[in-house]
Image 1 (cartoon, rainbow, N blue to C red):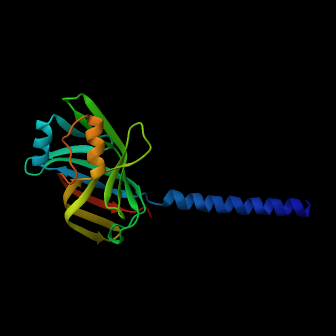
Image 2 (image 1 turned 90 degrees about the vertical axis):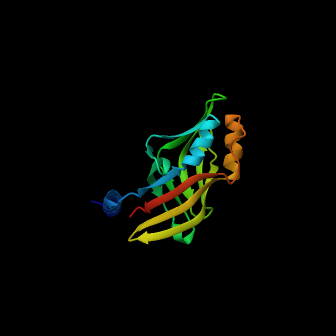
Image 3 (image 1 turned 90 degrees about the horizontal axis):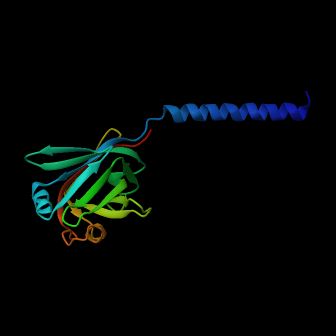
Length: 194
């Protein structure tokens, strides 16, 4: 065996070893986990219903209802690299959110939902677009805690972002949505990938 061939074989074996170690490390890493919950207050639900507007979570998000707190939409965490307490990064959610205006027959769905820790906005990408729209902003008393690796955010209020209100009014051909309108509350429980 020539020296050149031996060097190539040794280099190839070394690369294969590095690749297998990297693959094993990647395969054993735990993905990001947790969920985000938007609680739509009874007050907002009733106002929206009177205007003919309904918001519905899309799979893999799930809906819930509690007579005292109203409707809720729970979105699973699918990724993220953020640190909520230090105001950087973002957390991505599965599922989507569909808004329907029964009076105008208009609808718009948002996917690729995300919470940005640095801008404190919940964004979503409307179907047919690649550009995120700022939909909501946590407001009021906001508490961030940590339990081990899990980060938790509890916002006493969730309001419509000005860009989201304008976008929804335009797409649904309504004048129901206004900037700063209180939707309900918002919580996030997020464990980064390890």
